[in-house]
Image (cartoon, rainbow, N blue to C red):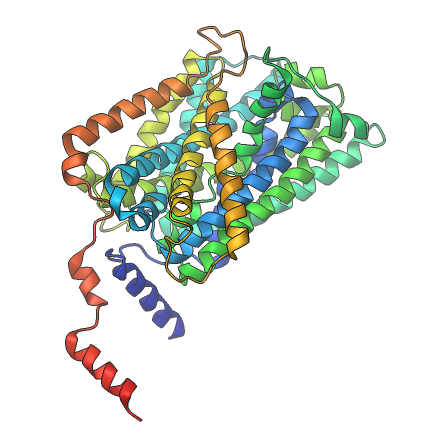
Length: 516
């Protein structure tokens, strides 16, 4: 009975923001934490993307880059948790911007919504691509066969299709899947770490190598190369706003949402840092790791175990984690598209905001996510550095969507938010905001740099091209539709009126208050 009343209160809070509760609140705090950590997938994402940092800073970039990215992302999450506590709606950042600075609602909210949508779709592509790369590494380790780009693209399509089918037809089972994903991830982290250390004993790398070795094979100056290596840490700790876009499917969102958002970052930093240090201690010859056709992660496990079958068995843990991540990121991406379309921010918004009556989920938004992910995958066929480009697109766009609401709050003296459950002390709020905005400003510029200084058509960072295309579509849509019809989050007056007391109720309440 108490749970039913709690859900009614949550739906009333959502109605007060002008939206009808259309999605079921199936998720518990544990299952939502499982989804959030499955999306972050820190230790797996960091280890699977070692190629980003190994030649761009080496061990110093891997270890200290994660510490730097960890502190900065924790500040971002702590700042955004205030918004989530005040306005627990699936729209997330674009909704927060709209209600925080009404004067500039249309254009700021529009930009925030578009970059957030793009970031989430790119993150689905990132996880599918990381998964396919691990499969490619397994094939190479077993047979020496070098998989071509188009063959890897087919594997990528396979992961995308599986994620779509599970999201579309097993929605009611997803909370249990995400609980399992949390325990699989934490268990896999422990098993792989302990096994790798045990098998490599006593032939460990030196502490000096793990914490101070610097490698620069990019052609950029050393400082720039190290900063480019932050992309790995940024990937492993981004997308914590998944909680915001799923917030309408959890009870007591104002209290539980912020705790989950910050908590998953904390778990990610701890597991990621420990696992990366373990990998570096058992890495063996680092040049072999950098150039291996099996990929850095599998090559390190091969060096540690000195057994191909054993290394592949250990690789199954991060591979399954990445499969879980692809599923969970697609779930979140579809909810983000649904929310933004519900407010009229996308082409064919009515179509994309439709909730399937039988499946109880935004199926059209899910289909759009899958189609765009497939298009992202085509980049991998054309460019040898598509991996960096897609990661860059995901991290930069998501970080931009985090930075806009934080900046809006700062420009108003941190007075843009109403009273809420999660509220930072003034000094801590300003500290987190300044660190967050500084990090976002620096990385937004750096992460669109090509990974090598001597640029060719094949190693170009096509992230900037993707940005240009998306920007063109967004501007075109704004000119023909947005500037005339988009006014920020749409308030359903009929729904909002349901939670507003009538004049008679207000008078009755005042009478009770004035009774002696």
